[in-house]
Image 1: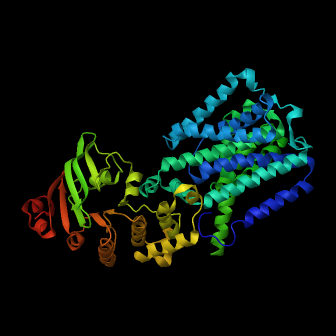
Image 2: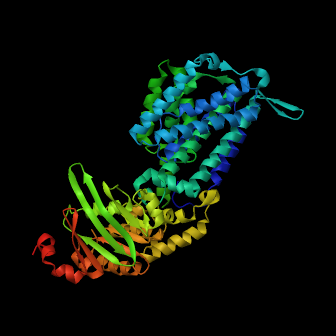
Image 3: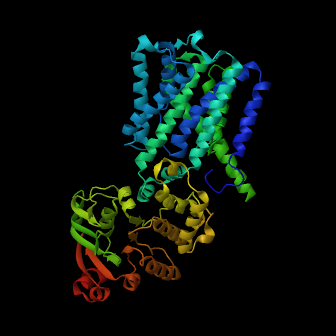
Length: 320
Length: 244
């Protein structure tokens, strides 16, 4: 998605936005809620894609950024009395700061070492959450009080328990982050990040401080992951340590690989596909992970660059 | 006027001394060739100058500032530009994007410059940079599609786009056809009107054709230095390198 472009780059996002906007009126309740979750997790995937897909930073520690947002927003709302918008932004800030600090250390390594260091950071974060069980309620987690989950505009009070409001807030967040991802990729910074993924020493010899660029990518990635976690906590009222476990570091990697690393639309497609794959497989059998695993292997074989990556490549080749 | 000077520059790899206490000086505006047998330390020397590897001992001064402690990207910003021996362009990017990557660095000041660049203006500059090496027609082609000789020219265009004060070329004619070598010599002479050129080269006819001065390295040290005619007549050089 970095080569010569025909037409407006904003056409696909407009279509996606229109489809998601319209979907809420036709989807049955159950899928309506699923779609809300998918859009929130897709923001997590967009964040992961900025680090992995754009800058080539293979991290296995992103659960800590999601959890930073989840706990940052959840605890500040529950215990410090932050309003919903403030708690949401605070969650994003927690993800950003954690990514900045972790990045300063972890980015001194690269490749497999980077993967291990981020995994260890994330594990440390997970254990920290369990250690402060009195505040975090550990694995069990806690549920946000009903009365604080509302948006106030003067006299008007909108409860976040309203599915339609939740859907549209998730949609607004997703579209904003989706456009942000595209804008970043098309900016001068985006060009440096993509080049860095391909050949870092060469980028240095062009006069770029690649450490700074990688730190920037990881920080943006952490902030987006944090916003995703914050939105999850506030919209679904649950905060728990499961979201900080390694599983939630692997998920965004799978979502992005499945949809297409480095593509703008890939994170949403990958997240949605994976979500429903797990849904359907667990209806058929209790050992659903086997089904999920087989399907993932097949998808990687047929679509080596992810669904969006491989399809757009074939489409370009067919046209030329 | 001295553009670059090294003092006692050394580099060890384990127990091997690749470069031993080299005092090397470049005048502004000259074309200098560094020659020597394989393993003489030529690439190690220019790698220390460009900042790709750190010296074990010694200092490097560039335009009257000590740059020994500077990182490679900081040196690139000061005008020391290195073009790679093994072609190191971005294969998956178009020729335009390759050159634009080099060009845009100068424009990326402040937050606004980092987030937005006038794409039309950048495109014009990229086209001009490719024009200099004769690749303007390939602007939108993926770099991977170019034949090898053209990839080397693209690498050079990226170097030129950085507006270098010192352009270091590591074996630029390796793998080029005879006609491409001739075109390269013309191009280098044109480049040298604006910038100092430091060339590592094995092709002696290219060296004799282009260089104003030649530095001969052998076994990690400078064996001789002088005008091409002097070097050709030097008995020690002939013995060590030219093999006659």
